[in-house]
Length: 285
Image: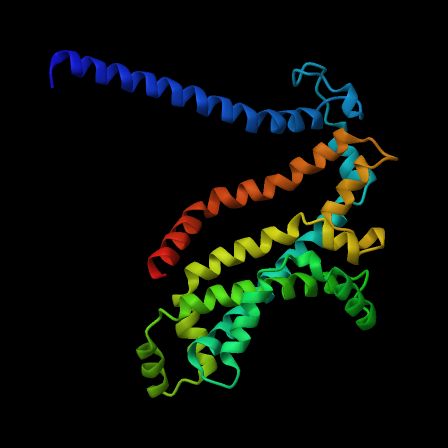
């Protein structure tokens, strides 16, 4: 290349770098500006969203909203309810999905393909399509306004997709490992627990995280299932601050920040495991 061509190439690279930098800064501003306002609202005196300043943190700083949230509301109860539902949903999803995937992957039985096709079809339809049927079933079994009824809804919604995903992963696990363990006298349950599950850890970790996140701040199904104030989850409790009758946006913002803190801590300490799990699942697949 001639000196002029080299200079032109460098100039084009600088222009591209500047353009990409400006574009990324604009995107960052668009993403972070609403979050900055939420954080600022949590520390701003007052309650109405109309009284919030355009420039964050210019109307003073207070922690009264956090004190009010933790002392004058049922926020801790909402937090506990959401945590119990999320933990139970995640545990049940991983156990039943891995067991079901092991059966579909390792055994032959009548209507096996039909069952797998049915699970695939169930993944096509949105969950809210069956809300009327879910409501009727919960009403008849006494699951309305109970946390265990909400857990059943999430568990039933998770199993088709997670079972299909884990089954596809297990199909790539060599069957020779099963045969070697069976020769040593291991039962099918022991093979699943001590051989298959450890190998499938990457996909199980990924599905465990997604299964926990989904019910944590879901609003639709808790709104349909739960009625009593003591059984409300975080989404329902926080929404009560910003209804037509209430305009406590600053308290809502304080609660939203507290909700986000556990997730931030969780992802800071588990990001390496999550990345390695995704990489392992991709390589295995």
